[in-house]
Amino acid sequence: MDYARMRAVADELTAHAPEDVRAVEISGDEIIMMMSPVNLHELIVYRLTRLLDRQLADAAEPFIAHGGADIEDPESGIKRRPDVMVFPESALTAGDAVHPREVIAVVEVVSKSNPENDYEGKMRDYPTMGIPHYLIVDPRNGTGLVLSLPHDTPEGRRYSTRREFRFGERVAVGAYEVDTAGFPTY
Image (cartoon, rainbow, N blue to C red; front, side, top):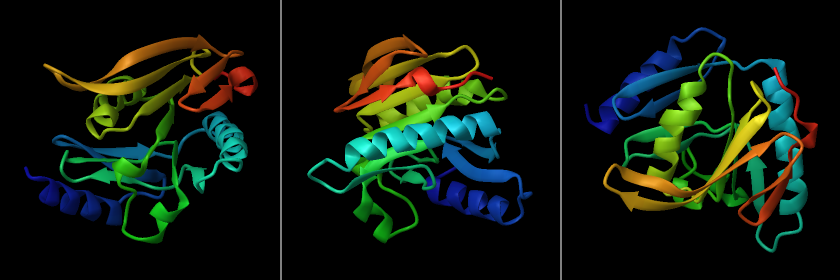
């Protein structure tokens, strides 16, 4: 099914979705309905956003860390809603979604109920969309990954660098640093 048709179906589902559906994502031929996350998930998102925003406030360009917008690439047939992404504030002034070429980094906090979405689907989709940095924070076991430098492989675009970490470490995500010491586990 072409992306425009998938998007129309996703929009129709959204109009009839229960209140606890937070977002609808599209990846390939799948429509994924995202449920509202638990409070500890949202606490990590809040702390990450604050950490990044403090660093972004000192940047020469007006970038923000934000978690309430969609990122959409009709060419790749992908629409996602990252927990946090870093992009120019001006990207919110037009359109229905942020274009992936404007995004510097995405962050996903792994949910208890659907970890495969972050470790498989989004690990495939974000480099396909050309997003330079992907941070995975996993409160299930207090670990995470920093992925970067998308490149072409026989299986499609994939990240070429991978750094594992444990909560308590400081990790570089592009030009920014994330102190994971304040992140709780489930």
